[in-house]
Every structure is written in structure tokens, then in C-alpha cells.
Length: 252
Image (cartoon, rainbow, N blue to C red; front, side, top):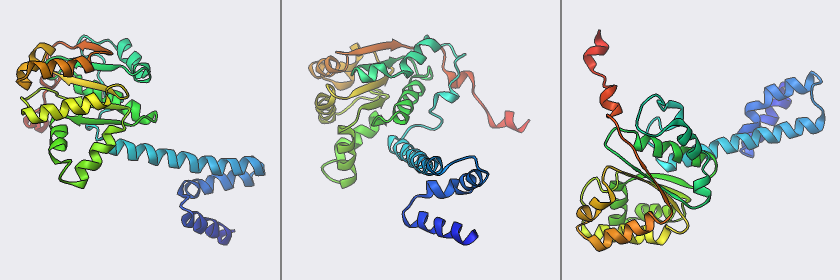
């Protein structure tokens, strides 16, 4: 029996079907107890492989998405008052807006949950099979600068160009150089009809022209982002400041 099991394990390793080998003991025990027939046993083996492959694929896509730490809604504090109720978040999590090609803009002061909500929705999209990525404005600007210089940046540009969803976190937090503002516009102009965006910002649309130092460019950029878009204004005090921790409190 052990020799046969070892041969099966060796074949699983040879054909890279670790999902089967990981469930082998439980499946054999169930089959030997008479709980499953040959067809059901075969199906269980294939299901174990499919589930294992799906899990690995989701983990790979989550890594590529580059989400912030603890970005799932499992950790979200729904008791925090920021103007967006749990029912609205649950509605967003259904991702109907993504299927219909809509954008979301989350506006509000620092600490009101903009990034957390955006990252949570991105995480949901990844786990449901969408090509979804989370990038800060700074990361995008660096990509634009380097895409004609390094293969890594070019590969990143091509990856994002095929996305179903892109989160741009902290857009317009800092002023942007004119050439990089043009690159941002060209990037969004290329994608906006086929890709949904989640934008987080602490600047009102009327302030974008000042950050870009170009009213015409700001208007053209907003025209594309806001064409099919739900704008959500978050308010309230900073969650981080309200739940601030210190080293000395931990010592006590």
C-alpha cells in the first residue's frame, strides 16, 4: 500500500499536481471506507487539483495587484463614521459598476478610509477573476519615467494596459511635472473606455488644474474619468488619529 501511495505521490510531483497529493490521504481513506465509487473518487482528485490551481492563481494575482497590507474588507471597521454606510459598501462589492464600465472617485481628508475602501474593492475584483491592480500616483509617475528605459517598467505598463480595473491612490496629492501630467492623460485616455478606475484623492476636481498647472489638461483628464463615474465624498476625523497607538501604552 505504501509503495503504491509513494508511486502516486511521485507521479503527482512529476506532473506538478500537488493539489492532488495534498488531499491524497483523505481521499484514499474515504474511498477505502466505501464512501465513494470510482467515478466520484476520480472527480474528487480532479477537484482537488482544480481548487489548488485556483488558489495559487488567486495568490499570484493578489501579489501582482500589490495591495496594501490588510486590504480585505474582513478587517474594515464599519462602526467608523465617514459618510459611507455599510449598505453602500456591500453594493459596491457586488462589482456591477465594474461590469458596466463605471469609475469610482473617493474624495475626502486623509484618514477617512479612501485607500482602504479602494483596496478592498480591488481585492474583491482580483478574487473574482478580474485583472485588477492597485498603484499609487507616485508609482505610476515612476513607471511613465522608466517605461522607455527598463524592461520591468515597460512590462508593468503593458500589464496595466490590459487591466479591467486600476486603482490610482492619492492622485493629485503632489504637483505633477508637465510631461508626466501629459503621460498620465495619455495613459487614461488610452484605457478609459475599456478599463474602470478607482480614484482616491483629497483634492476637489476644481483643484486639479492647480496641481497640474494646466487647466485645459485637467479638464480633459477629468472629462474622461468623470464621464461614467460615481463620486463619493468621505468626511469625518482621521481613523488613524482616533485609534492612535504608542509604544509607551504597550509597555503598560
